[in-house]
Image 1: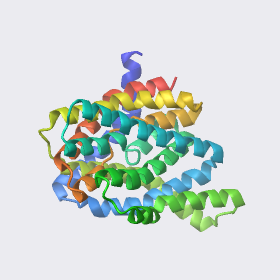
Image 2: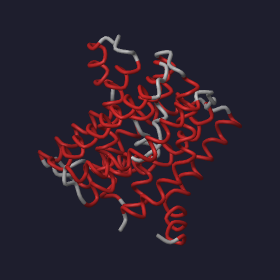
Image 3: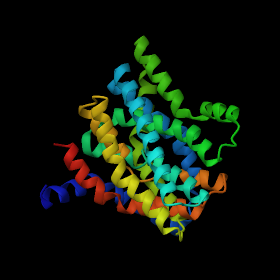
Image 4: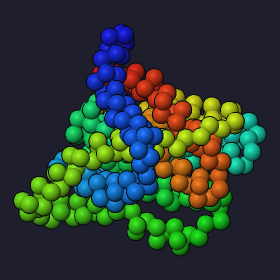
Length: 305
């Protein structure tokens, strides 16, 4: 793996993401943009449209989509078990353990993972990445909320919360249209294409804006554990499980790349809502995002062979 190959992979696939993210970071600092409002626009409009467009254009097989969903669940649960065991071994405080469980189990598969897969492996791989992203989102707002609430969550409210995730409706609608071979009207199709094309740049701007809220924590051991597991261990777990499930090609490239992403920025929402160590959570997100090019670059070269 030569330096030229690494540098070229970084410049072509990761640097564009960092540049747009940096632009969002600068806007957040200089203009004090409210990330919550921008995030809602992405969450309720652009993200569902992108996923819908990906599924419609590439028309994934049901069995392939199901395999990626099951793989995603296995990766998230495996990372949770490993994190819990190591946190117990290091005798971390309960608040720190919950914080690193959230940041280690759930990766930034949306506004970082989707554009990276698109740049590195193209539209076909992006369809599988979309399935991975949707599954992660559902797990985050169910299992993630349950963990953050320390087991005191109202399960009925959690179940009802699934119906507030618009991306789920986009997936269901896409599969219905594919199954029934429904033709989308021209004006609607163009509107979908227009919105889908603007989603990834908007996601990257949002990523930069959200990183302006970072506060550093003194829980150095917990931070090192979470960042190490997220960036170094998660890709190996994903590679192992893709072998177990016999997932190959674009699905393997997309799934392993998504699994190797830094911590999910939305973890800060749970940290605030459930009184976790918010400073630790935001520090992990920031550090893992900054360091991620060092691990993602050689991984992309490996997957591209």
